[in-house]
Length: 232
Image (cartoon, rainbow, N blue to C red; front, side):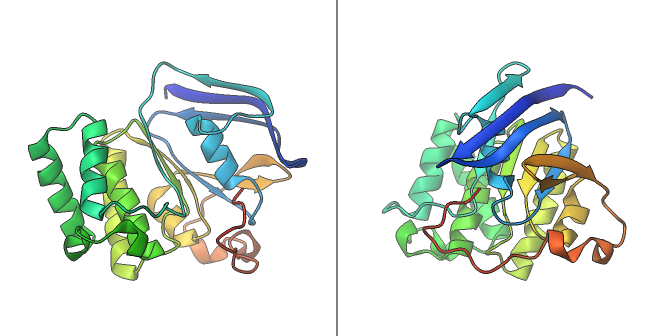
């Protein structure tokens, strides 16, 4: 497989706290990677470094050419824009024509049960609905690399199944998937590679056929994070 990104001895500190500790990782074309681990273990941080959204404190990130990234955060920012206006702007940024934006937005919003939400201000939408908007904008134009931070944390059951189908379709189109998550069934449904974040490093683990056999401690959240708590 073609190597797209390589992390070499990456370390990252926030406020003096070491989150990543000389982590090394290679990401390959058409790979679907899941990162799991306890809150604060570095799952979100490693995604942001891979995407170039934050810089490492130490180490080097090597990209194989110019890559198109789309990133979906767990907590999507609330704005005064309506959902429809936001998606139109994002489609324009991706270079889509007005007719392409209208067609793709219409289909994706129907798939995710959002047809009645397009004229609603995003500041009035729930976390789950904002996540759907984030996923839709990322799917308007398939990227080379799609990064997903806790993509199902606010989703209803029907939307979860739509999400899984859409991501697996992207995998058939040679899109590389990188996500952080706690849900064993999601890892089993869309991932071919699993890393557990331990002591500031991604440790490769096995994806088992029976997801119930995966250690519970890897996926349990220890208390609900507040809206103001930093996500690592």
